Length: 261
Image (cartoon, rainbow, N blue to C red; front, side):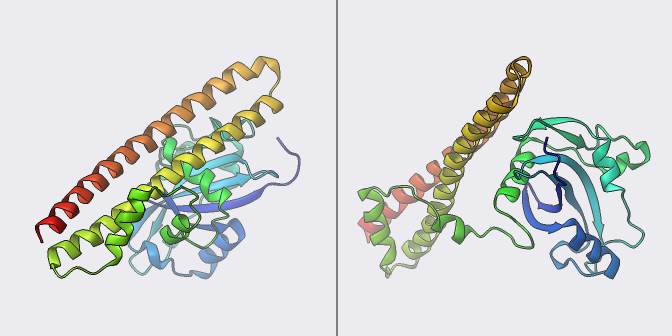
């Protein structure tokens, strides 16, 4: 681990993705000034305190619940000793710089704060890693931005479909189907791009782990990286299959309607 003072971030989750991030100083100012968090009114938000090392690898994570009232303010009286909880964290996964210190519902060094914690799954660590990599501070990722950065080659068949979708059809049913196909095509490409990026990311993590760990630790750490890698790729592949099947189904329906009209 690096001896340089780490950065401290707070990430807020929507479902299984990080939707907003703050530096700890900004988050503390929100709490102190009772500023609104409009996106999360009247709910308990899944949040994570993350200590980030010099090379932008997570070193410690605290998975905590953040209660937000119906006006969009964090409940008055809310407080957690995040740094202290992070320092007392148990063993977590390797996120690029050795095993992190993890505090969550199943391992919390301060027993009376256990109920304020939540239990993460692999995809939550993936979301945090992506938020750090994308410098997600005060902004949410845009699907349009994600697709714009894609380098996936487009086949001639896809070009033909794109040309067909760009022309307005007189039949409202065909037009509605075209719009649905456009949406699913974007989702399909986004899933494929994410899969490619995660494969490359895992390769980088594996290379860094090999350089940093001594001979005794390599076997255990490599096994953990491989397990996380397989879980992440499997989840992305399943999502990709669903998007691909739906994309094909919509394409077939569009062809049928085009022929009949």
